[in-house]
Image (cartoon, rainbow, N blue to C red):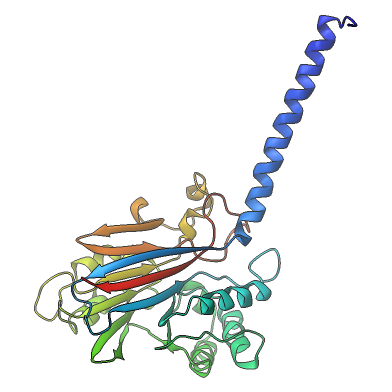
Length: 297
């Protein structure tokens, strides 16, 4: 075997080490770029004593924070594919959590695409319900916001702005209470005081910063615990795990930044959402569609 001087061996070792470091960095960067396109379906089953035995099972599909825009953001083509994926889950209810595009004008285009056939329309047995996120009314004149509202309705979707809808399913009723961006104690209590603790209520909001105020709000009888499921977005789950705070994506408490938790026996979800903001990258926070099955206890 041919002898190799020690200094040649060390040079080869350094080159190999640099090559491995380069490949590792390249792989991490590539993952950041690829992950925003790797939509996952998060499935959760919830049992609730307020949920009527008459319904037996309710399939809810929830998605939020689409942030539709041109490549490299979440494109129209990706939006249409996501809608088709939602429909493939055979939902009874589809719930939309806001921030559909980048501003009022582009949010209007998001919903108009469902009317003119650019997008497949959502299909759900008992309907589609939506709330606004901050981006949906950002920079929009009142006339533009009104146009967005009319377009949502024309797309067959019910917009909730600090209001509650009742959904009749057989002999039972499910309530969906939707919060507008910036809703505070007064608006939340105006909704909570309309409900009894025995009602099955889904609280649909955009910003998880309202969770604590909502948890404290009294129902019609003065008791807490007026809603049974809380769905929120905005944070993108942190978007870049470990680095999300550097991007200052939200100002909500850490426990409300990402995923499921239960407080006072109420399931709460802060979704990763579908799109991205600030940078079109994700890390360990893949885009999500949620399939939530409700069963009676």
